[in-house]
Image (cartoon, rainbow, N blue to C red; front, side, top):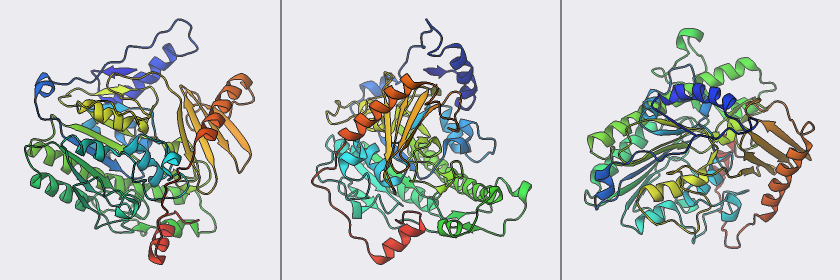
Length: 457
């Protein structure tokens, strides 16, 4: 369902009302027709394909952004972008940590098929990534990454003409300013006659959380914060974590989002100044969210609850000037096919996702994590099923009635549960590890860094 003509951050309230009036339990209720975002005639007829800007926000929850109803004013740049872009209210990542999620997004394949489901192996050499597809059609491909998993160690530089990774996995060093500066440098130096694909990976909301003095929405409430930096290990090694610890953590986390949002705003302003915004495909997305004791732990990667796999996704089509809200569930598998479609290219036969340009049929959406043990999830309409193989248990949630996934309805709806779990097990058994995966040997320093970031075994 697409709602147009009202600001996206207010559309969610409208959609909640619509979902009561028009829901699967109301016989004869037909959903509104899905429409494509507006594309200007000048873009459709020009010989030059549109530029493509893909902004990856590491570790950003949907419910910490103003366009999704968050009360703190920490995302003004993204909120403004939502006024002229399509916001996908129920976008789902295919995993809850970076390596599999980004690999899946850039290839429109499931992580385990790529060999990156359980371990952050190097991408298979035959993986048809989005930059590879676009480069084959004349695009200059430019990449700036600050995440170790999205680097030359893991095969990501291969399909980029220029790829800068000098500030990988920051620790407590903010990097959003550098990402924007380097991305704008690339854009200024790019050939004007050719379309460009830019991938910009912002890492700051990830552990360690840094409190930025000029981006602290809680300063007037909580006063000075003696803990300016919060590390993952510093939190995990504490004997007990309580709600006040989460208040402090969320404050620092919000500060990181606000700092990143400011520099994403600088990137958007720079694109406009260079004349590369209006007729570009602009995608802003997160690879996964973050847990603050929502289901008993902190960080990410260990579960497939919505605080980790429900992610923000905004897409501005070439020439689009009016915001819209799309409420049906979509997968990050759909991002690459949508970009290919909006760029005027033929459909990629290996893509498992579908273009969102004309809307989509209701498909089952799958997600999984294998760190440290297998947990898999299926989203179908308003319902979500989870299987935890270590716990030998399964749950079914009605996300309309129980968006925080606190009460399983599995026992109350045995037929629905049987259908969802059968489909989920069928998908899980059909996945496979490819034979040509290549493990990346890590140095002791890299192992220590990953443990500090929450990826230790």
